[in-house]
Amino acid sequence: MNLFNPFLKKSLLIAVAFIFSTITYSQNYKLDNNTSFMKIEGTSSLHDWHINVEEQSGDLSLEQAEDFMINYLKLTVMSESLKSGKSRMDKNTYKALNSDDYNKITFKYLKTSEVKKLSENIYEVNGLGELTISGTTREVLMSLKIELKDNMVILTGKNDLKMTDFGIEPPRALLGTIKTGDEITISYKSIFKTK
Image (tube, rainbow, N blue to C red; front, side, top):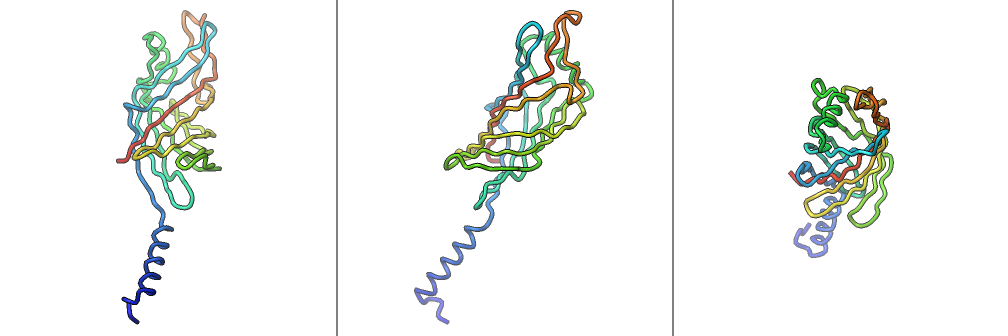
C-alpha cells in the first residue's frame, strides 16, 4: 500500500477531519463579577423595591458539537452583598436571610429540557436548577438566553420566586406597618469569560 498515493492521502485526510469534527468540544468559563449584573425586585405595602447583588461568582462548562449543552453551571452570591442603598432595608434583608448562619446563596444547574437555536451564536435553554437560600434548597424551572461571543458567554434570564418557599418570612419595617410582598423577581445578566 502506497501511503503517498494522492487518492489514498486525500481519503485519510477526510477520515481524520470527520473524526475530529465529531469529537465533543468542551469549554470552561468563570463569571466576571465586574461586568455581571443581578437584581432582585419586589413589592411592599408602601412601594416597590429592588436590591442589587454586588458580589457573585460562578463556573460554567459548555459542550459544543452537533448539539449545544450545559455540562456544568454553578453560581454563588454572598448574602450580605445584596445592597438597596438603604442601610435599614439591608439590615432587614440580612436578618430575613439569616445571613449570620447562611452567608451564601447558591444555584446549581441540574438538567436541560429543551434547547432552541435562535441564531448562529444565540440559544434559548429551558432547564431545571437547584437554588439554596437560607439553608433551604428548592428546584426551580428556568429559561435562559445564552449568547456565545468571542471568549465570552453571556447568560440572561428572569425568575419569579416566593420567599416563603425558602422558609423566609417577608421582611417588615416601622413596627410591622410596612410589609414586604412574598413574591420576588430575580433578573440577571451573567458574563462568563474563558479561564
